[in-house]
Image (tube, rainbow, N blue to C red; front, side):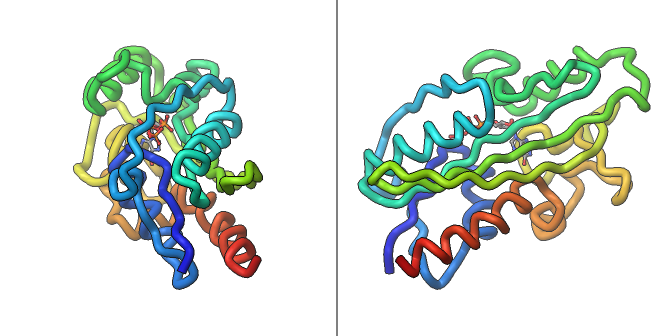
Length: 199
Ligand code: ITT
């Protein structure tokens, strides 16, 4: 069975991607398990560019097919911020909690109807030869007035989904993966992986 490298150091993404793309055709592995310790500069201006940069860097470093995820939150009242800067929004090395607090402070006084937002996810699958395929998904909701829920990671405790009447962090693992930006992108990615496994 060929190996598929999950090209991310974010434990939340590793858990979700491992579930979403699990397949009989690929043996999933991680940078830690392959002894790969690289830091890739995310110099792109779009999720697409950054996902491709990460997947290609890991595919070359490990000489394996690699799958990377670049994702983030776009808030309408902030003209699409934090976007590709979602991980760095409260500075390098900040915690999920600090990022959430930073975003809530930015939106202080913004009324409910103007707090719409979307999560975006672009998954890139790269081969060591330098081929890249991109898959994407989005999930729409609102930025809540305060944190709620313990599940998931990142901005999940303040991402409110009207259809559930809950934040993303109040959904079960299966519910989140059923409706999330990552779940949608991963369902496309599974088709790409199926095709690649037959090559
Ligand atoms: P890798 O680059 O190693 O994959 P990262 O955390 O730096 O890890 P990104 O550059 O793609 O990844 O940043 C995405 C950030 O957006 C992430 O740190 C979260 O804060 C947020 N995010 C992405 N998907 C999310 C999700 O499903 N739920 C909550 N927050 C999410």
